[in-house]
Length: 113
Picture 1 (cartoon, one colour):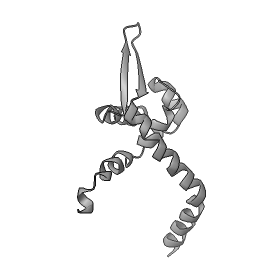
Picture 2 (cartoon, one colour):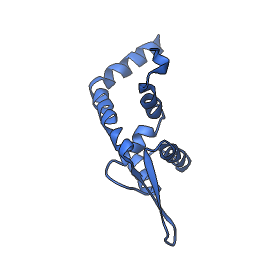
Picture 3 (cartoon, rainbow, N blue to C red):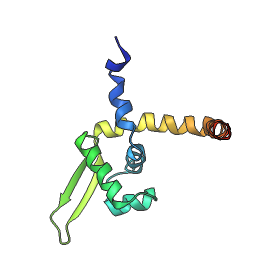
Picture 4 (spheres, rainbow, N blue to C red):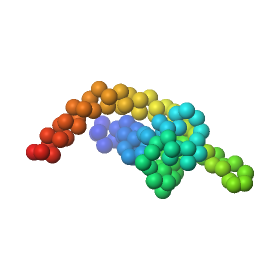
């Protein structure tokens, strides 16, 4: 079997987006409106958040709920596969806490070259 054919690539590809893990993590506590997500996350533009949510929805990781209210209300929530990705996201967070400073130091050394 070739690494290019490895089924794990699906997971790696899903998590490769800059905001993917952040948005999934922000939804861990339950459904949220886009404005609430922007407040929880910080630093993400409305356009990028919308693009990320659409990509997550297209991949079946979040579901979009529209409410027939005036004004219209939209919420996003994790699906079962989306909740399943929280485990590797949390593991990556633990890895970052443990090794992040070493990685940043290596990057600084490489830049100083």
